[in-house]
Image (tube, rainbow, N blue to C red):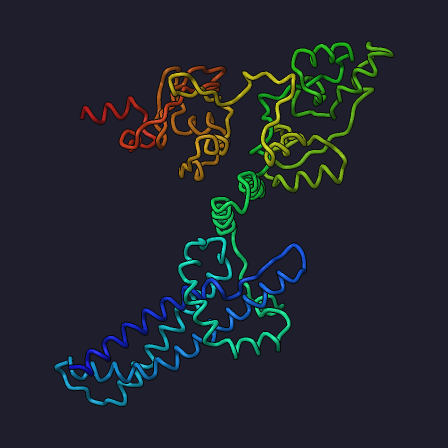
Length: 443
């Protein structure tokens, strides 16, 4: 009986020890210490971390050796508790030992791969402090060996070039997770996380996501005089205007800059804007935004025309539109506050412009609507028109957890919606018009 209890206890202890050891090793292996200055304190800390690393590795190796001994104890335990006789004790002993070894190797490989990506950022300090006793014990126990290894190797193993080459690359979601954890721990500012997310989102956007669409585009005809163009500027407030032929937005010839108009007005305001025309480039509406920015920089132009697959004008993109995607909207003194696409009402409803992009809607309400990703539409009005082409004023439709009510329609385009966020139970009728939902309920 005593032998059985001893064997059972030994098996339990070895698993607990390995679990604690792997948790510790996950935090130590491939950890890089980065200091601002190469001083005595940083060198001392580097040596301390190196000793900790070697202690963990030595402990792991000894654990594998110990697994062989405890597998024998496990065999004795199985012989006493199993009714079916064991055919070959030697064969079972090898099998159990291999089982121990497989578990150790599998756990180690999994923890190594995760430690390379998340160590010290995704791991809370409380866990490190909890394992401090194991670190101190391993350092003391193996100090003669680890001290020799530290002297033999000038730089920590985890700082070597070979270790760098083995470190796996992380994807965007993992970087965001690491950054969020760093913000929680105070290692980074909130703005660091905001700009990190915007940078990744920026890479996924194309011209149609940020452009001023064709219907909102203010243009000037090539026959317009400088004086007339200045009046347009005073009424609209834009600093650059595309210049078109025959008042056709598909025939954009270039653009005029307000600075040129004001300077020319001091000389002769009666000439046409054709004398002040600046060149403008066109790019497909599916062009990634970062490619647009590179093209603007290389061509020294602050404005680009986005064209559709048929060569027609889809909209324009300015350098300001691109910068706002990274740093947020910076309103000019002449910008009208009423131009906001999403406005919160006192009754906790929202007035949402039909020109609001699906992406901006999700970002404003901090939600992810799966059906938006599957749609080819860019704006809220376009998406809802796909669901209900016959939608009229005061008609409503439920999308995910939001109730959309059409408030204003102009030439078949829904300019404004009244949006109300619904409780989860009400939002189960996903993408079903309210009138249809009532009819189905009556049936």
